[in-house]
Length: 82
Image (tube, rainbow, N blue to C red; front, side, top):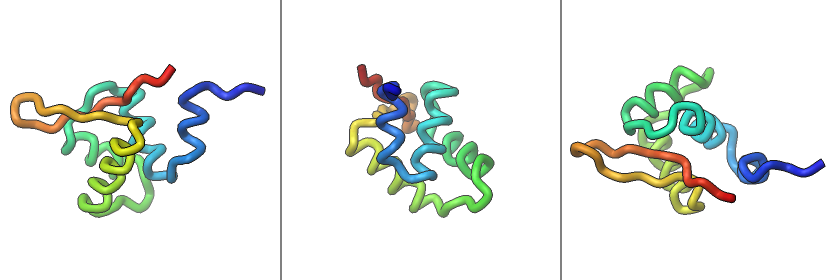
């Protein structure tokens, strides 16, 4: 059985990082505060915003996500691997 690129990518992520990736895959580009709110709603034990920012930094460092500023808002999106 061969794994899809996103399935291989998910094997190295924590459960909380998988939640972030799932939301971004489903919704596409998402603003920081909205992404944090959606993540809090998607987990039984929401994390503090500082912990959430650490997850985003790790995902960006691993080139799983990218961010840009739009209208002074930080917007995140999944990096396509293929």
